[in-house]
Amino acid sequence: QAHNIAGPAARDQSQHVPQQYNITMALEARLAELNQLQDKLDVAKGNYNEALDTIWLLLATALVFFMHSGFSLLEAGSVRFKNAQNILAKNLIVVTVGFLCWYAIGYPIAFGMVQNPNNFSGGTNFFMDGFWEKKETFRFWIFQGAFCATGGTIVSGAMAERTQLKGFVTYTIFMTTFIYPLVVYWAWSGKGFLNYTNDEGVRESVFGAPFLDFAGSGLVHLVGGVGALCGALIVGPRVGWCRDAGPDEFDAHSVPLCVLGTFFLWFGWYGFNPGSTMGMHTLDQAYTAGLVAVNTTISPCFAGLMVFFLRARVVQPKRLDIGGFCNGILAGLVAVTAGCANIKPWESAIIGLVGGGLYQAASMMLKRPRFGVDDVVDAFAVHGVNGFWGIIAAGLFGNPAEGIGGNGSFYGGNQLPVQIIGALLILLWSGSPRVLIFIP
Image 1 (cartoon, rainbow, N blue to C red):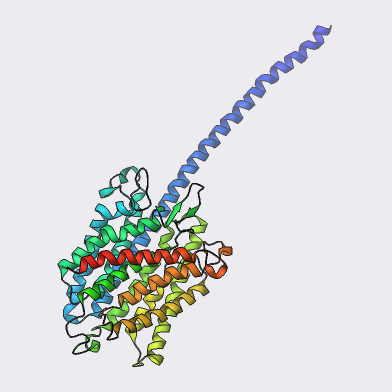
Image 2: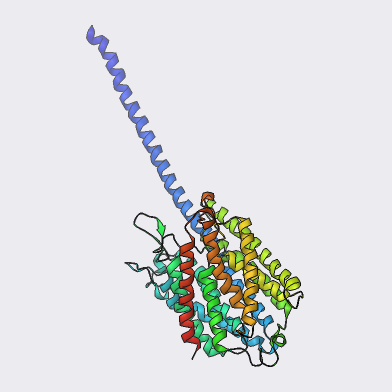
Protein backbone atom coordinates (compact mmCIF):
# COMPACT_ATOMS: atom_id res chain seq x y z
CA GLN A 1 0.00 0.00 0.00
CA ALA A 2 2.90 2.33 0.86
CA HIS A 3 4.47 1.45 -2.47
CA ASN A 4 1.28 2.43 -4.26
CA ILE A 5 1.19 5.78 -2.43
CA ALA A 6 4.91 6.63 -3.17
CA GLY A 7 4.68 5.60 -6.78
CA PRO A 8 2.67 8.56 -8.17
CA ALA A 9 4.80 11.10 -6.20
CA ALA A 10 7.98 9.63 -7.59
CA ARG A 11 6.53 9.72 -11.07
CA ASP A 12 5.61 13.44 -10.63
CA GLN A 13 9.19 14.28 -9.54
CA SER A 14 10.61 12.45 -12.51
CA GLN A 15 8.38 14.52 -14.79
CA HIS A 16 9.50 17.82 -13.16
CA VAL A 17 13.21 17.16 -13.77
CA PRO A 18 13.02 17.36 -17.58
CA GLN A 19 10.84 20.47 -17.33
CA GLN A 20 13.37 22.26 -15.09
CA TYR A 21 16.18 21.16 -17.38
CA ASN A 22 14.35 22.57 -20.41
CA ILE A 23 13.75 25.89 -18.67
CA THR A 24 17.44 26.12 -17.68
CA MET A 25 18.54 25.35 -21.21
CA ALA A 26 16.18 27.97 -22.61
CA LEU A 27 17.46 30.63 -20.20
CA GLU A 28 21.09 29.80 -21.05
CA ALA A 29 20.28 30.06 -24.75
CA ARG A 30 18.61 33.44 -24.26
CA LEU A 31 21.56 34.61 -22.16
CA ALA A 32 23.96 33.55 -24.89
CA GLU A 33 21.91 35.49 -27.43
CA LEU A 34 21.96 38.55 -25.19
CA ASN A 35 25.73 38.26 -24.83
CA GLN A 36 26.08 38.04 -28.60
CA LEU A 37 23.85 41.09 -29.01
CA GLN A 38 25.93 42.95 -26.41
CA ASP A 39 29.13 42.05 -28.26
CA LYS A 40 27.62 43.27 -31.53
CA LEU A 41 26.45 46.45 -29.80
CA ASP A 42 29.93 47.06 -28.37
CA VAL A 43 31.47 46.59 -31.81
CA ALA A 44 28.91 48.91 -33.39
CA LYS A 45 29.47 51.50 -30.66
CA GLY A 46 33.24 51.31 -31.17
CA ASN A 47 32.84 51.71 -34.92
CA TYR A 48 30.43 54.59 -34.42
CA ASN A 49 32.86 56.34 -32.06
CA GLU A 50 35.70 55.86 -34.53
CA ALA A 51 33.58 57.31 -37.32
CA LEU A 52 32.56 60.30 -35.20
CA ASP A 53 36.14 61.03 -34.18
CA THR A 54 37.35 60.70 -37.77
CA ILE A 55 34.66 63.02 -39.10
CA TRP A 56 35.42 65.54 -36.36
CA LEU A 57 39.17 65.55 -36.95
CA LEU A 58 38.84 65.70 -40.73
CA LEU A 59 36.48 68.67 -40.41
CA ALA A 60 38.88 70.38 -38.01
CA THR A 61 41.79 69.60 -40.34
CA ALA A 62 39.96 71.19 -43.26
CA LEU A 63 39.40 74.35 -41.21
CA VAL A 64 43.04 74.50 -40.11
CA PHE A 65 44.19 73.88 -43.66
CA PHE A 66 41.87 76.67 -44.81
CA MET A 67 43.87 79.03 -42.57
CA HIS A 68 46.59 78.99 -45.24
CA SER A 69 44.23 80.87 -47.53
CA GLY A 70 43.89 83.43 -44.74
CA PHE A 71 47.65 83.74 -44.33
CA SER A 72 48.00 84.08 -48.11
CA LEU A 73 45.43 86.87 -48.37
CA LEU A 74 46.72 88.70 -45.32
CA GLU A 75 50.36 88.59 -46.42
CA ALA A 76 49.61 89.39 -50.06
CA GLY A 77 47.61 92.42 -48.97
CA SER A 78 50.32 93.56 -46.54
CA VAL A 79 53.15 93.73 -49.07
CA ARG A 80 53.54 96.01 -52.07
CA PHE A 81 51.74 94.85 -55.19
CA LYS A 82 54.95 93.99 -57.04
CA ASN A 83 55.85 91.39 -54.39
CA ALA A 84 52.43 89.72 -54.07
CA GLN A 85 53.30 86.72 -56.25
CA ASN A 86 56.53 86.10 -54.37
CA ILE A 87 54.82 85.92 -50.98
CA LEU A 88 52.10 83.68 -52.40
CA ALA A 89 54.76 81.31 -53.72
CA LYS A 90 56.23 81.07 -50.22
CA ASN A 91 52.85 80.19 -48.76
CA LEU A 92 52.54 77.36 -51.28
CA ILE A 93 56.07 76.20 -50.47
CA VAL A 94 55.30 76.02 -46.74
CA VAL A 95 52.36 73.70 -47.32
CA THR A 96 53.93 71.42 -49.93
CA VAL A 97 57.44 71.15 -48.51
CA GLY A 98 56.19 71.23 -44.93
CA PHE A 99 53.82 68.29 -45.32
CA LEU A 100 56.48 66.20 -47.08
CA CYS A 101 58.95 66.87 -44.27
CA TRP A 102 56.26 65.99 -41.73
CA TYR A 103 55.63 62.76 -43.65
CA ALA A 104 59.28 61.76 -43.73
CA ILE A 105 60.80 62.89 -40.43
CA GLY A 106 58.67 65.47 -38.60
CA TYR A 107 55.89 63.18 -37.39
CA PRO A 108 58.26 60.40 -36.28
CA ILE A 109 60.16 62.89 -34.10
CA ALA A 110 56.97 64.43 -32.71
CA PHE A 111 54.84 61.33 -32.09
CA GLY A 112 56.79 58.23 -33.13
CA MET A 113 56.86 56.17 -29.91
CA VAL A 114 59.91 53.91 -29.62
CA GLN A 115 59.80 50.70 -27.59
CA ASN A 116 61.37 52.37 -24.57
CA PRO A 117 60.25 56.02 -24.86
CA ASN A 118 62.50 58.83 -23.70
CA ASN A 119 61.57 62.35 -22.60
CA PHE A 120 63.19 64.19 -25.52
CA SER A 121 62.25 62.79 -28.92
CA GLY A 122 60.35 60.13 -30.82
CA GLY A 123 61.89 57.86 -33.41
CA THR A 124 59.47 55.56 -35.26
CA ASN A 125 56.83 55.71 -38.04
CA PHE A 126 59.19 57.23 -40.61
CA PHE A 127 57.32 57.62 -43.90
CA MET A 128 54.17 56.37 -42.09
CA ASP A 129 55.73 53.00 -41.31
CA GLY A 130 53.30 51.03 -39.12
CA PHE A 131 50.23 53.14 -39.91
CA TRP A 132 48.51 50.30 -41.75
CA GLU A 133 48.40 48.24 -38.56
CA LYS A 134 46.83 51.17 -36.67
CA LYS A 135 44.64 52.96 -39.17
CA GLU A 136 43.25 55.53 -36.72
CA THR A 137 46.68 57.16 -36.88
CA PHE A 138 45.93 58.56 -40.34
CA ARG A 139 43.43 61.11 -39.05
CA PHE A 140 45.79 62.14 -36.26
CA TRP A 141 48.67 62.53 -38.72
CA ILE A 142 46.80 64.86 -41.06
CA PHE A 143 45.46 67.03 -38.23
CA GLN A 144 48.86 67.46 -36.62
CA GLY A 145 50.47 68.00 -40.02
CA ALA A 146 48.17 70.96 -40.64
CA PHE A 147 49.37 72.44 -37.34
CA CYS A 148 52.99 71.96 -38.40
CA ALA A 149 52.48 73.76 -41.71
CA THR A 150 50.68 76.60 -39.92
CA GLY A 151 53.64 77.13 -37.63
CA GLY A 152 55.92 77.34 -40.64
CA THR A 153 53.93 79.95 -42.55
CA ILE A 154 54.03 82.48 -39.68
CA VAL A 155 57.60 83.38 -40.63
CA SER A 156 56.99 84.07 -44.32
CA GLY A 157 55.16 87.35 -43.74
CA ALA A 158 57.74 88.74 -41.33
CA MET A 159 60.57 88.50 -43.89
CA ALA A 160 58.47 89.40 -46.94
CA GLU A 161 59.88 91.37 -49.88
CA ARG A 162 63.57 90.63 -49.26
CA THR A 163 64.03 86.87 -48.72
CA GLN A 164 65.11 84.53 -51.50
CA LEU A 165 63.09 81.40 -52.13
CA LYS A 166 66.03 79.06 -51.59
CA GLY A 167 66.65 80.54 -48.16
CA PHE A 168 62.99 80.24 -47.24
CA VAL A 169 62.86 76.62 -48.44
CA THR A 170 65.86 75.81 -46.25
CA TYR A 171 64.13 77.37 -43.26
CA THR A 172 60.88 75.48 -43.97
CA ILE A 173 62.72 72.15 -44.09
CA PHE A 174 64.41 72.67 -40.72
CA MET A 175 61.25 74.09 -39.15
CA THR A 176 58.97 71.20 -40.10
CA THR A 177 61.59 68.48 -39.69
CA PHE A 178 63.26 69.30 -36.37
CA ILE A 179 62.40 72.61 -34.69
CA TYR A 180 58.63 72.24 -34.40
CA PRO A 181 58.44 68.43 -33.99
CA LEU A 182 60.76 68.42 -30.98
CA VAL A 183 58.75 70.89 -28.92
CA VAL A 184 55.60 68.99 -29.86
CA TYR A 185 57.10 65.79 -28.47
CA TRP A 186 58.03 67.55 -25.23
CA ALA A 187 54.46 68.66 -24.51
CA TRP A 188 51.94 66.76 -26.67
CA SER A 189 53.27 63.25 -27.18
CA GLY A 190 52.42 62.13 -23.64
CA LYS A 191 56.03 61.03 -23.10
CA GLY A 192 57.98 64.32 -23.23
CA PHE A 193 59.51 65.93 -20.17
CA LEU A 194 56.93 68.75 -20.14
CA ASN A 195 53.89 66.45 -19.96
CA TYR A 196 53.93 62.71 -19.26
CA THR A 197 52.22 60.07 -17.11
CA ASN A 198 54.16 58.77 -14.11
CA ASP A 199 54.08 55.24 -12.68
CA GLU A 200 51.01 56.09 -10.58
CA GLY A 201 49.07 57.17 -13.68
CA VAL A 202 49.25 60.89 -12.84
CA ARG A 203 50.09 63.56 -15.42
CA GLU A 204 53.14 65.63 -14.53
CA SER A 205 56.35 67.20 -15.86
CA VAL A 206 59.90 67.16 -14.62
CA PHE A 207 59.16 70.59 -13.14
CA GLY A 208 56.01 69.55 -11.26
CA ALA A 209 52.57 70.15 -12.81
CA PRO A 210 52.13 69.12 -16.46
CA PHE A 211 52.71 71.86 -19.02
CA LEU A 212 49.40 73.22 -20.33
CA ASP A 213 49.01 74.34 -23.94
CA PHE A 214 45.69 73.04 -25.22
CA ALA A 215 45.96 74.07 -28.87
CA GLY A 216 49.36 75.67 -29.36
CA SER A 217 49.87 79.24 -28.12
CA GLY A 218 53.43 78.20 -27.36
CA LEU A 219 54.07 75.09 -29.41
CA VAL A 220 52.77 76.60 -32.66
CA HIS A 221 52.59 80.38 -32.38
CA LEU A 222 55.50 81.16 -30.08
CA VAL A 223 57.73 78.85 -32.10
CA GLY A 224 56.67 80.60 -35.31
CA GLY A 225 56.83 84.08 -33.77
CA VAL A 226 60.37 83.63 -32.50
CA GLY A 227 61.38 82.48 -35.97
CA ALA A 228 59.76 85.59 -37.41
CA LEU A 229 61.77 87.85 -35.10
CA CYS A 230 65.05 86.05 -35.82
CA GLY A 231 64.45 86.21 -39.55
CA ALA A 232 63.46 89.88 -39.57
CA LEU A 233 66.47 90.84 -37.45
CA ILE A 234 69.06 88.82 -39.34
CA VAL A 235 67.80 89.44 -42.87
CA GLY A 236 67.43 93.13 -42.07
CA PRO A 237 64.87 95.70 -43.23
CA ARG A 238 63.69 96.23 -46.77
CA VAL A 239 65.72 98.66 -48.85
CA GLY A 240 64.63 102.18 -47.95
CA TRP A 241 62.58 101.14 -44.93
CA CYS A 242 63.26 103.43 -41.95
CA ARG A 243 66.33 104.90 -43.59
CA ASP A 244 65.20 107.08 -46.48
CA ALA A 245 61.45 106.87 -47.01
CA GLY A 246 60.31 105.55 -43.63
CA PRO A 247 57.77 102.80 -43.01
CA ASP A 248 54.71 104.77 -44.20
CA GLU A 249 55.65 104.21 -47.84
CA PHE A 250 55.60 100.47 -47.22
CA ASP A 251 51.99 100.27 -46.04
CA ALA A 252 49.76 97.39 -47.11
CA HIS A 253 48.70 97.74 -50.72
CA SER A 254 45.27 96.11 -50.19
CA VAL A 255 43.38 96.54 -46.94
CA PRO A 256 40.43 94.45 -48.25
CA LEU A 257 42.74 91.46 -48.71
CA CYS A 258 44.03 91.92 -45.16
CA VAL A 259 40.50 91.99 -43.74
CA LEU A 260 39.40 88.95 -45.73
CA GLY A 261 42.54 87.12 -44.65
CA THR A 262 41.79 87.93 -41.02
CA PHE A 263 38.26 86.58 -41.29
CA PHE A 264 39.54 83.43 -43.01
CA LEU A 265 42.06 82.89 -40.22
CA TRP A 266 39.44 83.46 -37.53
CA PHE A 267 37.15 81.00 -39.29
CA GLY A 268 39.95 78.42 -39.44
CA TRP A 269 40.65 78.90 -35.74
CA TYR A 270 37.36 77.11 -35.00
CA GLY A 271 39.10 73.99 -36.28
CA PHE A 272 42.40 74.86 -34.66
CA ASN A 273 41.06 75.18 -31.10
CA PRO A 274 37.86 73.09 -30.80
CA GLY A 275 39.43 70.39 -32.98
CA SER A 276 42.13 69.91 -30.35
CA THR A 277 39.66 67.88 -28.30
CA MET A 278 40.89 65.17 -30.72
CA GLY A 279 37.48 63.47 -30.72
CA MET A 280 33.73 64.01 -30.51
CA HIS A 281 32.10 60.85 -29.17
CA THR A 282 31.61 61.77 -25.50
CA LEU A 283 29.64 64.45 -23.70
CA ASP A 284 32.81 65.80 -22.10
CA GLN A 285 34.40 66.30 -25.51
CA ALA A 286 31.26 67.98 -26.82
CA TYR A 287 31.01 70.33 -23.86
CA THR A 288 34.72 71.14 -24.07
CA ALA A 289 34.49 71.93 -27.79
CA GLY A 290 31.58 74.29 -27.13
CA LEU A 291 33.46 76.11 -24.37
CA VAL A 292 36.56 76.36 -26.54
CA ALA A 293 34.57 77.84 -29.43
CA VAL A 294 33.05 80.48 -27.14
CA ASN A 295 36.45 81.48 -25.75
CA THR A 296 37.84 81.54 -29.29
CA THR A 297 35.20 84.16 -30.05
CA ILE A 298 35.31 86.34 -26.92
CA SER A 299 39.07 86.90 -26.67
CA PRO A 300 39.70 88.23 -30.22
CA CYS A 301 36.70 90.54 -29.94
CA PHE A 302 38.17 92.26 -26.91
CA ALA A 303 41.72 92.26 -28.28
CA GLY A 304 40.73 93.71 -31.64
CA LEU A 305 38.64 96.46 -30.10
CA MET A 306 41.43 97.29 -27.66
CA VAL A 307 43.93 97.86 -30.47
CA PHE A 308 41.38 99.74 -32.58
CA PHE A 309 40.65 102.09 -29.67
CA LEU A 310 44.30 102.63 -28.78
CA ARG A 311 45.25 103.54 -32.34
CA ALA A 312 42.21 105.77 -32.82
CA ARG A 313 42.32 107.65 -29.51
CA VAL A 314 45.61 107.15 -27.71
CA VAL A 315 48.54 106.32 -30.00
CA GLN A 316 49.78 108.77 -32.62
CA PRO A 317 48.78 109.51 -35.32
CA LYS A 318 45.34 108.68 -33.83
CA ARG A 319 43.61 107.29 -36.87
CA LEU A 320 41.26 104.42 -37.66
CA ASP A 321 43.80 101.68 -38.40
CA ILE A 322 42.12 98.67 -40.00
CA GLY A 323 45.40 96.76 -40.26
CA GLY A 324 45.95 97.19 -36.54
CA PHE A 325 42.36 96.07 -35.89
CA CYS A 326 43.06 92.88 -37.86
CA ASN A 327 46.27 92.14 -36.01
CA GLY A 328 44.57 92.84 -32.68
CA ILE A 329 41.98 90.18 -33.49
CA LEU A 330 44.72 87.70 -34.37
CA ALA A 331 46.59 88.55 -31.17
CA GLY A 332 43.51 87.70 -29.12
CA LEU A 333 43.15 84.39 -30.95
CA VAL A 334 46.77 83.47 -30.29
CA ALA A 335 46.58 84.47 -26.62
CA VAL A 336 43.54 82.35 -25.77
CA THR A 337 44.69 79.24 -27.64
CA ALA A 338 46.69 77.75 -24.75
CA GLY A 339 44.03 77.90 -22.05
CA CYS A 340 40.81 77.98 -24.08
CA ALA A 341 39.58 74.63 -22.69
CA ASN A 342 40.33 75.44 -19.05
CA ILE A 343 38.93 78.94 -18.50
CA LYS A 344 35.56 80.67 -18.36
CA PRO A 345 34.49 83.20 -21.01
CA TRP A 346 35.02 86.19 -18.71
CA GLU A 347 38.62 85.06 -18.23
CA SER A 348 39.09 84.85 -22.00
CA ALA A 349 37.91 88.46 -22.17
CA ILE A 350 40.70 89.54 -19.80
CA ILE A 351 43.24 87.50 -21.73
CA GLY A 352 42.11 89.20 -24.94
CA LEU A 353 42.30 92.70 -23.47
CA VAL A 354 45.82 92.12 -22.18
CA GLY A 355 46.80 90.47 -25.45
CA GLY A 356 45.64 93.47 -27.45
CA GLY A 357 47.63 95.83 -25.25
CA LEU A 358 50.73 93.65 -25.46
CA TYR A 359 50.47 93.48 -29.24
CA GLN A 360 50.25 97.28 -29.51
CA ALA A 361 53.19 97.82 -27.17
CA ALA A 362 55.38 95.26 -28.96
CA SER A 363 54.48 96.59 -32.41
CA MET A 364 55.39 100.14 -31.43
CA MET A 365 58.60 99.14 -29.67
CA LEU A 366 59.98 97.07 -32.54
CA LYS A 367 59.42 99.91 -35.01
CA ARG A 368 61.39 102.42 -32.93
CA PRO A 369 64.71 103.53 -34.50
CA ARG A 370 66.60 101.85 -31.67
CA PHE A 371 65.34 98.45 -32.80
CA GLY A 372 64.28 99.04 -36.40
CA VAL A 373 62.74 95.59 -36.90
CA ASP A 374 61.00 95.44 -40.28
CA ASP A 375 58.33 92.83 -39.51
CA VAL A 376 55.95 93.30 -42.44
CA VAL A 377 52.89 91.67 -40.83
CA ASP A 378 53.84 92.18 -37.15
CA ALA A 379 54.26 88.42 -36.88
CA PHE A 380 56.36 88.55 -33.71
CA ALA A 381 54.04 91.02 -31.96
CA VAL A 382 51.02 88.87 -32.86
CA HIS A 383 52.34 85.31 -32.56
CA GLY A 384 55.51 85.60 -30.50
CA VAL A 385 54.44 88.04 -27.79
CA ASN A 386 50.92 86.70 -27.49
CA GLY A 387 52.06 83.11 -27.76
CA PHE A 388 54.20 83.77 -24.69
CA TRP A 389 51.34 85.60 -22.97
CA GLY A 390 48.95 82.74 -23.78
CA ILE A 391 51.22 80.24 -22.02
CA ILE A 392 51.55 82.49 -18.96
CA ALA A 393 47.79 83.18 -18.93
CA ALA A 394 47.11 79.44 -18.81
CA GLY A 395 49.12 79.38 -15.60
CA LEU A 396 47.22 82.30 -14.07
CA PHE A 397 43.60 81.59 -14.98
CA GLY A 398 41.48 78.47 -14.68
CA ASN A 399 39.81 77.47 -11.40
CA PRO A 400 40.58 73.86 -10.35
CA ALA A 401 37.21 73.71 -8.58
CA GLU A 402 35.37 74.06 -11.92
CA GLY A 403 36.54 70.62 -13.03
CA ILE A 404 37.68 71.68 -16.52
CA GLY A 405 41.41 71.18 -16.04
CA GLY A 406 42.34 74.64 -14.80
CA ASN A 407 45.13 75.03 -12.27
CA GLY A 408 45.66 78.78 -12.22
CA SER A 409 47.72 80.62 -9.65
CA PHE A 410 44.87 83.10 -9.10
CA TYR A 411 42.95 80.20 -7.55
CA GLY A 412 45.78 78.67 -5.55
CA GLY A 413 47.00 76.32 -8.28
CA ASN A 414 50.62 75.49 -9.04
CA GLN A 415 50.53 75.75 -12.83
CA LEU A 416 52.47 78.99 -13.34
CA PRO A 417 56.07 77.80 -12.64
CA VAL A 418 56.02 75.09 -15.30
CA GLN A 419 54.36 77.50 -17.76
CA ILE A 420 57.18 80.02 -17.31
CA ILE A 421 59.88 77.37 -17.61
CA GLY A 422 58.22 75.83 -20.65
CA ALA A 423 57.87 79.20 -22.38
CA LEU A 424 61.54 80.01 -21.79
CA LEU A 425 62.63 76.61 -23.10
CA ILE A 426 60.53 77.10 -26.23
CA LEU A 427 62.07 80.54 -26.71
CA LEU A 428 65.59 79.16 -26.37
CA TRP A 429 65.05 76.17 -28.64
CA SER A 430 63.09 78.14 -31.26
CA GLY A 431 65.63 80.94 -31.47
CA SER A 432 68.98 79.16 -31.49
CA PRO A 433 68.58 77.01 -34.65
CA ARG A 434 66.96 79.91 -36.53
CA VAL A 435 70.05 82.06 -35.98
CA LEU A 436 72.20 79.34 -37.52
CA ILE A 437 69.79 78.99 -40.45
CA PHE A 438 69.27 82.66 -41.29
CA ILE A 439 72.82 84.04 -40.83
CA PRO A 440 74.28 82.25 -43.91
